Length: 133
Image (cartoon, rainbow, N blue to C red; front, side):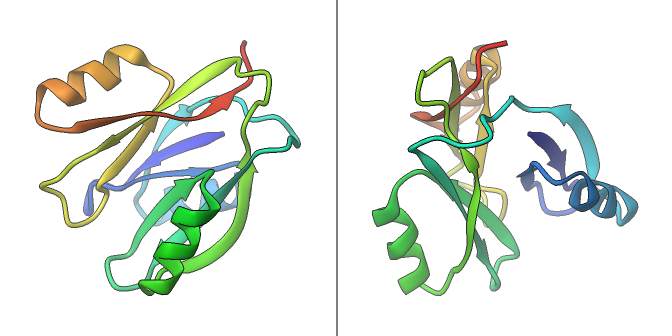
């Protein structure tokens, strides 16, 4: 999974599509390399959503959260990737209550998770799992 950062909005973006990554880099996003390795398939999809009002993306394994966001005006972009059902490498979710865009971050790096909490982000636990490397 590729991890990108938009220095204008503060949003992190995640995709398994190299062409999408390359396009975003060409328009000013910063590539942060590989965020984690997702399995090709599993019983646990990770849904990708887009907020056309804020220009923000969100990712969740919860069909309830997906459906609630769609009712609130977000666009359902389908399954972005899958979580590792063997629970190899946890991907942590953090929320910035002060952000209007880029309010969520996802990382396998526990030190990053702890650092963001120390500067005011809310730790939201494990969002899904990547394949253990």
